[in-house]
Image 1 (cartoon, helix red, strand yellow):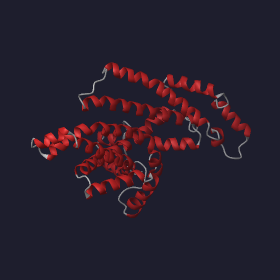
Image 2 (cartoon, helix red, strand yellow):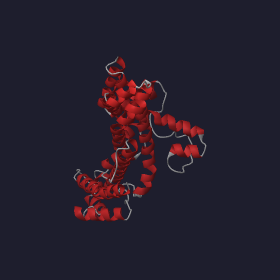
Image 3 (tube, rainbow, N blue to C red):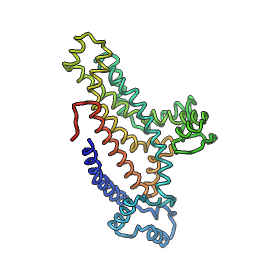
Image 4 (tube, rainbow, N blue to C red):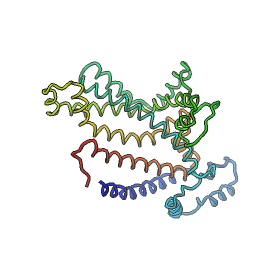
Length: 334
């Protein structure tokens, strides 16, 4: 197991290097430049050229890439071209917001999607199965931006059940310790802030959970149908075991591998796919940060956030692969 982990960690290096190169290349192919985006339209050309020189944007691309990689290897993500703030500081403030949103979205997706898939498989071709798969098809096909706008209009504007956006109310005081606001509210015993945070979190997390919830429901149903048709399930029924025990202990346990794989893939997708959700709800996470940085051609921010997302994605996939051995004892890593 240890040798396998070491090999996987080593294999992450070329993957992350490839990500940095591709992102660096494509972002520099975007029309425009940061100097023009930072200045007004009628700004003197000499001022724009001086900004390019100060930021090193007038150097050849290979030289800019070498400088960027040198900073990365030293653990320095650089500074934002727009705000001049250290990217590590802004990342430490924004990543926890996205992590909280992605965590609750995945929690909702698992708690609803997996049971829905199990019930659909057990009651195959029933009204419950048809309705569940129909709803999951809508969930996969529904554009996130449209669903988010409709959710805000219904639950925030008409019903006034939830706030329309942001992470915490402007009138709520919270002592920041970890920048994970929910954790900070619990650590400081601030019940008022905790309740307000959950009210702000529920609507964007439900919207973000729509696609992974639908995918999990369909994958769980498919895996469970395959497992329920196996001989060991029929044997368990023949022994007189309860139907619930057969479904949970025998069928679900053997159907978990593809389900866990989808969960692992969706974690990375939630982190990268939160751009639309965070932009619509005004959520101060890395998704909205990347969107704003692309508009202003803030190259270091886009490159650094993409690298962090790629690192998280690869790490989650490694954890998923390692979990296979615990789920299925027949799997051994050498």
